[in-house]
Length: 335
Image (cartoon, rainbow, N blue to C red; front, side, top):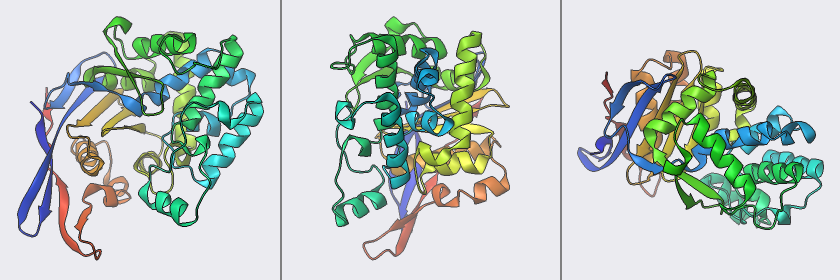
């Protein structure tokens, strides 16, 4: 049963609550703490992107096309489609000599509401590059080119590039690939359903290399270093993933998944964390993640202060006046 993670107040009353599940796992697979169901079955969604990006490196495509750290980082991203993101994506397309129309991620406005309003107000021309998943798709297309795979149906689960990616996800998350439930993600590629335990374990193994062969370790390290070096690519201006990675100063990576999934890998501690808000509401996700990180003493006082906007966001009325707040009440049971 999911537990109450976040309360939303309006004046003196708690007007609604958001329930969730979370688990902390060390690199050996031991559960250190949890709240709700530590084995909640759900889709990892875009929190899988750092692990999926490992396949671009493992395939040899990253080296063949000379992708730099910034470009590796945006493959891991759910980016906002800001100008600096689009510029990076265009440079990647030049490297692989492919037009943006070949990407099968769809054409979408920014997932960031503030930037979406700017796009609408200024009548931006929206292309596949504006999709928050376009970096991942360029990585997939580059891998297909390097391996000699076709591009027409690279988004289907039967395509060899997706089978390769499934193998990588299964190995990193230490789960039999036949037990991974395959759905279709918002950007049209396969998405992986598994217990949040395996998501957390995957992040613990990815950031430490524990249980992985040397090739996998090197790929995981490259992904980690790229995200830490270029957090602005992982989300965008004022985005939680970007600000969390920046504030933590290299000690962790964190990645959002749709329907309010969040995964974190803390390198020196050798642990992974996975959080899922039951109703998929993002407004509850960041306060819950912040409280878990604070209670586990993963973030220090100064780092928490840099992220206060995410810790207790206000509940605003239509005039922008604070009428309440979102407060995290999640309590992790330590084992």
